[in-house]
Length: 230
Image 1 (tube, rainbow, N blue to C red):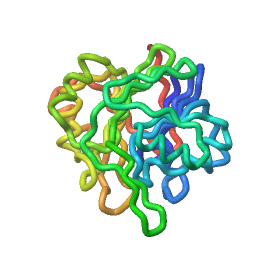
Image 2: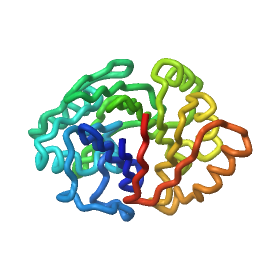
Image 3: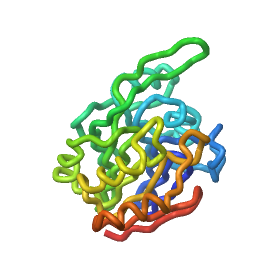
Image 4: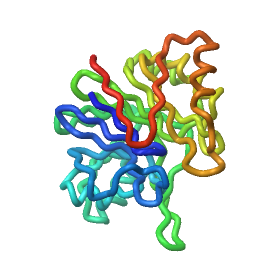
């Protein structure tokens, strides 16, 4: 599987299918691609905030691609004439040879349209299974003890973990999350997009090494890819 960071929390997973997660492209100062450059078979959205829902509607329509997300957000997207597959915490959606399991996240979720704030259900994390590889995108969250269950039940190979603080856990929380989940690879996300979430990812790598956690930290630049072989 080829894993490409598109800046912030946006990722493109490429294998037998292309899976796009949290496509915040327009307005993302670190986005390496334009919306029209993205080709995907499936879009997965962790929650409704603009820096995660992003360009979902336009990309879904351009690619004739369904969107997997929590039930309430799917109803919002259907009103935008997008094919949306609604699900909920604990469930697994199987679509186009891709498994998407929705797991807990500690965060909020809403969509802003003009002056209106629309609730879009609960924020979530997702475990995406493709070509024998499992990728755990935590979404926006703090660390929580039940991450141990996610690790035990789903055994993710790769964990995409926020380190930016302010809106999510910071470096200390992310290190503890790795202790709970025990992935093979950890890729830090959700940092350096805005001033309030500025972090040095090398400090995250150093903290993981100092704790003696057997996880390889892979630091990507926006647009850079990492290839994982199961």
